[in-house]
Image (cartoon, rainbow, N blue to C red; front, side, top):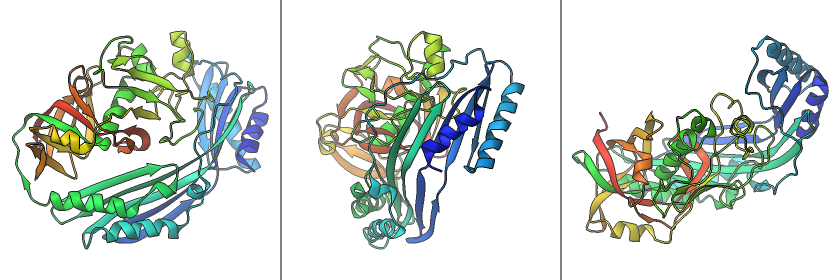
Length: 442
């Protein structure tokens, strides 16, 4: 049974006993993992993943299943209806998405979806070879295929997506350097180029010096900026957080430097992901920050109903308690090369990766975390030696506030935020100050 047929069949099985919405994901996922410079695992997953939400007199239940046979679908429906009847009334149940015209499809590349183990292994081999004897570890995964949505209000949507992600490190024994690439097209992934980047970082950071805590001018890599964007999105641009008074966002206010423009756009050439959300609402481009001014929030049907507005298509699976999450974020690039950014720093730090970031205060966006896989001192406009990993405690919103953004790179790419790939594209960013509070031990 195909994805749309499966979705329609579930709606038929529910009938008029409940309001129902269902998403059926037929994406195939393949993973090649390597460590100690050899491939030790290749796995693949096939099948359908079904997510069903039902409301019986505003009593809501959610369930998932990997069974797509008739008995399995019938069991999923009956058990979810039974669960809904036992639930308390959900006063915020917004009802179902009304039928809406589909938007332009997201990017899909068949070569990515059908990539073979040999195809992935070739890029892994190129990554390892670029290290010239360094120990390599990481993964290369590919996924792609169709997803369908249907609800009992008559909404029916289907789309195909693809994603290829290479994430790897080279290790010297005392240091490591990382490199990452994500694209809808597997042909964009360059194992050799990534290996060279990772190996260079590892070698350059093999010997480190201690640096005293304090405020330093910094240049943050796209990975660091992507992590910042995730925290801003999850806790600040999430309309549920805003409605509950937990968000920093003040719409219409100049909260960021004028150089900062951030959009959420599933159709951006760099983006990966579906053209509709878990509620079945077609996604649309949303300008969240424009020239530093906070403009919009991410809404799902629930928050849109509470706010008296419209969903922006940002519901996530099982996200009723958390709220809407922007998952196609793009920090718009500037026109300066990374070399130029570095050249403008008299004394500061070049940070390649953040690690173990944790929010301390959602309203001020104070986050604590560590640097990882290469932290370098910049002196006189040139990269100097490596420094030991540092702990920071920093307000992300303050770091990007007016007057604090000194330059934005032209190197925007899909970067690996700490919560995973494919959520954000970002350039390197030069900031006036970043607060480091200690070493890796505290």
